[in-house]
Length: 413
Image (spheres, rainbow, N blue to C red):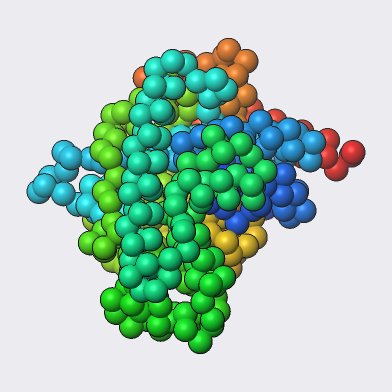
C-alpha cells in the first residue's frame, strides 16, 4: 500500500488543508509571544485553524488562551511538556531526544481535558515536579550571579526578582511563573546590557565564562544563548541536574490530565541523530513499546526529506504525527510550521500533520463531553474499531469537522 493512501483516503494529500500547529509555548513560559492573546492574534493573522500549547509546570494562562482562541475562531488545543529520565536503557545510557544529556526524554501531553482543576493525584505530581524545577532554577541563578559578580557585574539578579519581572512583563500573577533556563539567561543578559558599555560586554562575558567569547554583544538572543551554553549546560559551572522524574510518572501524569502521551522527535536537529531515534523504524518500535501512539516534529530544525522519512515510517506503524514551532526563544518566526530555513513542507507531511491534529482535536472534544477519546485511561488506543486505520480515520473525520467548522465561522464573522 502506498504511503499517501495510508495517510488519508484523500488522493490530494496536503492540498487545501488548513494550517495547524500543535506546539507553542505561552508566557509566562519563556516564549516569543508577550501574551497568550498575542499568540492567537499572530496565528489568526496567518490563517492558522488550530493552535496547541506545550507549557511546562503551570496552566493558569490556558483560560486566557482559550477565550482568545474562541473569539478569533481558532481551535485551542491544550498540552504540556515534561522532562523524564529513563534509567532502563541498554548499555547503561543513551541519548534520546536531548543531544547533550544521557537518558533524558522530553515527553509531551496532547489534548488535556482535566487540568482546570487537575484531579488530586495529578495536582500532587505537578506540585512535586514544579517544586524541584523551581529549586533548580534558584540554585542555578545563584551560581550564575556569583560568576558575574566575580567578573565585575553584580546586578542584584535573584530568582525572586526574575519571577516578579516575568509576571509583570506577561501580565500574570507571580504564582503562575515557574522559571526556565531561558528566563534566567535573559535576566543576566538584560543586566549586562543595562550596566555595561557595549565595548566592555565581551570582556565581562569572557571573564564569566573563563574563556574568550566571540558572541555578538549587540544581539540579545545570541548573548542569552551564550550564557546558557557556557554556564548552564551539563558540565558547565552553573549546571544543576534536573530532579529525576521517571518516565512512568510523566506518562501517568499525562493520562491523569486526560491527555495523549506524545513523543517530540529531534531527528536531525542533532548531529548525529540521537541513537534512540535512529533509524526511524526502530524509533517506532520503541515508542509503541512504551505505549506512545502519537509523535510530533518541530520541522523548523529538520531538513524536509528527514521530516518526510520520519512521517512516513511512523505513520506506517500506526503512530499519528503532528508539527509545531515551539516559539520558545525571543526570535519571532511564523506560526505555520516549515522545514529548516523556511522550506515549505511536502504535501505528504502536511497531510499527516493535519490528520494528527484532527485526531488530537477529536480526542479533546470527545473526552471533554464524556465520550471515549483516542486512548483510554491506561494509554491504550480505544476499542471498538476494526483496526488502527479505521480508528484514525474516524477520529480524523471528527476533528476535521470540528476544526473546519470553527474556521468557517471565523471567515463568516
